[in-house]
Every structure is written in structure tokens, then in C-alpha cells.
Image (cartoon, rainbow, N blue to C red; front, side):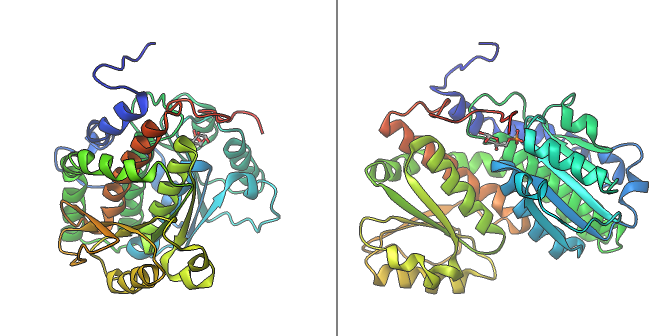
Length: 369
Ligand code: G6P
């Protein structure tokens, strides 16, 4: 193999632990101070980004989940309406084209057939403002796009995407800031605070990785289960989706993600002692709402595994297991909260003895429809 495993048992584990470096490399352009400017996305980015009225994000799989997180950022920070679409749906949907929409395609490989076709479809409909966020510079998707941001995750070998995802989020955070700035919604103070948050991200991720031994213990209990439910709210709902996807992909445990507020509209009927419920509980404005959702689960005998931030004040009790994240990280919190979910699925898969790097029936890059 061109890329060595070194001290790691699997590429997935190696790639999870490479995230601080992958983020530092991707964010190198802002390392030495400076500011966010449109040129991060290509020489003629100013012209393309100026006057953008909405953003349409298109992707598949894990890259789609990165897009879903970005929607919360783009609307809250840049105040630009954003929709996020699965590429295989968008390409065949009779949608309404708008030339002032920025079309953002996200892809680790840059070769996913549906994402490439969706990009061509958007262009054919007169949507010329296109941006690729991609990990492979000379890929088909990058060649088809007017603007580009190349994530510098390095080669990702494990089929289940990890470091590509967090670097995509870093790129999307930069895009959010750039669009906010163009729209006159980012003053110098806010910009420098946001940039500091990004610069500190590799260190913050490193601290989360140190939770591995505790997560490993949780995974032991999980591996025997047949189903799991992931809950999150707001910008952490897509993180719940990503956690469920990871668990499905490599440990073959059936997992579903729900926006916590939807519990009562269905999934609560499934909750019993055999259905572990994983909750993402950052110390944000939705925490109190989430806590009452968790009580509903507990009242039905569901076993809770809660990823809480420092300061979340959720207490451990019978059937409520808590893992405290080192710090609360504001807007960028989803980047930190996905890490324990990656580790949880990795260790659950180890217990089950599945082929972690090459899960059955799945391919790293889906280049045919
Ligand atoms: C496959 C991979 C996923 C990936 C998805 C999209 O399903 O197994 O890990 O997220 O394709 O791939 P892309 O290269 O476009 O990000």
C-alpha cells in the first residue's frame, strides 16, 4: 500500500487520528493571521460570489451531511438562504433554476457519478456560479466547476469517510465567512474571532480524540445491539445523521437519526431497553429542549448515551451515560461532536469483527449510477 498504516490497525482509525493535521493543512491559508477573502475559492471568485442570493449545496453520503451542517451556518451567519440536496435527487428533479444561486458541490473523491451529473445538470440550466469543495485537485468535479476549494485531508483509504468530512466542514466555514463578509455581515471583530476559532480547531479536535478509551467502553455495550437511535438538534442534527451512517456502514448495526423534536412523531414507539439512544448535547441554545426529549426516552426505559459539552449539566444516573466533551465550541461545535461518533462506530465494528476499511457491498467512490 502506498500509504502506510504505521501504529494503527485500520486506515479508518489512522484517518480519524489524522484529523488535527488534516484540518491544520486545510486551514493553512489562514494560519498566519490575515482575513477571509473570496480568493480562497479561486482567482475570479469575487465576481462569482458577489450578488449571490442563495446557495444550493449538492452532494452524496457523508459529503451531503457536511452540506446539511453548512446550511445552518450560511443562514445564521451570512443570512443567505440555503438548500441542500442529495445529488441523485437533484439531477432528476424538475427544479427551478436561478442564475444568482451559488451551486456548491461537495465531494471527497471528485468522481461521484451522481454529484458530477448534478453539477452538469445545474450548469445546463444556466446556473454558472459553481464551486467545488473537493479533496482531489485534478478530479472531474473540480474540472467542471468555476471555483474550487481543495481540502487537504490527504488520501482517504477507509470507505467510511472521516477526515474528508471534517475538512469539508472547515472549508464550508470559510465559505460562510466569505459570503458573510461580502454581504456586509461580518465586522472585523467577528471575523477575527471566527478565524481564531478555526485556527484553534486542530488542538480542540486533538483533545476530543483523547476520549477514545471511554468511547471504546461504550462500544463494547453497543456491539450486541441490533438497532440504535441518534438524536440531535439544529446544526447537530446532521451530526446525528452522520453518526448513524457511520454505525450502519461499518458495524452493520441498524441506526436511524432523528431531529430530537420529532421523537414524539414516531421513533418514541421504538424505544425500549434494547434500543440505545445516542444524544448529541452541546451546551447551546437548544440544550433545554433536548433535555426534555431525553427524559421522554428515559421514561420509556431507553438507555441513553449522551455526548455532552463541558457545562451541559446533564447528570449521570441509572440508564443515563454521559461523556463530557472538553469544551463548548460555538458555531464550529459540529466539527468536534462528530469525532466521538466516528470512534464509537469504529470500536463497535472492531468488537463485531467486520472489515472496517472495506465494509461489505460499499465502495469508496461510486463512479457509476
Ligand atoms: C461513498 C463513500 C462515502 C462518501 C460518498 C460520497 O458512499 O463510501 O464515504 O461519503 O460516497 O463520496 P464523495 O467522494 O463524493 O464525497
